[in-house]
Length: 260
Image (cartoon, rainbow, N blue to C red; front, side, top):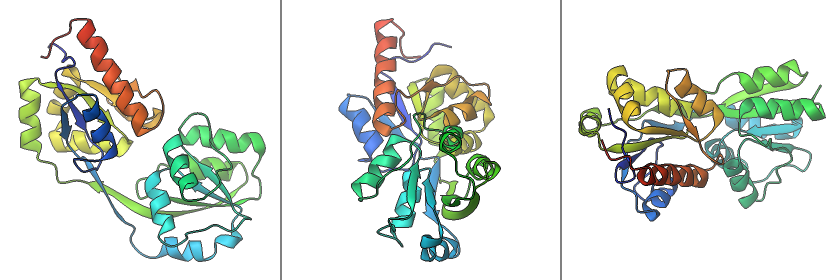
């Protein structure tokens, strides 16, 4: 099967509207964008987050792994006590925190949970109380890693990541036409849910004709675990994801790779 070049469409699998940040930037490059939101974000069940934040002064650190976690915390806690330090994964998460007046005390160079644990290991966190507001689907890497370093970690559900109502028949029709050049993934959940919505056969067909571009190494790993190669965004930001996708399609066009 031929791979699609720059004239083909780009799929956005994150939950955003037509004028969302990733979609808008891709369109600014002249790319045709298809919105296939594979996941949706919903409020957390229960009041565990609110209760934990009411006791925020008992913690030494709060860890943010996504902008969704930041938004969830800010609903209940517009400011942090000076005694609480902030750790963030990824430039996008750190940017949102700084924009809201939060100082970011620790951010690893690589936007991954393992890198955050390594950064804590380098400076030490034994005995520290750490609050980790996380997705309902958060992997255990952060909580387990920091616990092994001697920290006392309280992980609470800050928001739920759920499957979105995707028009799978319409998506499969695009795949059958071979008109897709790249698929952008901003989270492992998007990989999981797109495969589930399309079915393994059409998911494999899609990534046989189109390049998979991943926001970070954890998302890329979700693709490689399914036997799919992934191009890693130059930076773990939506802007980096858009620029990498654009350059990839430009390179294919320059190499004379036509749409399938």
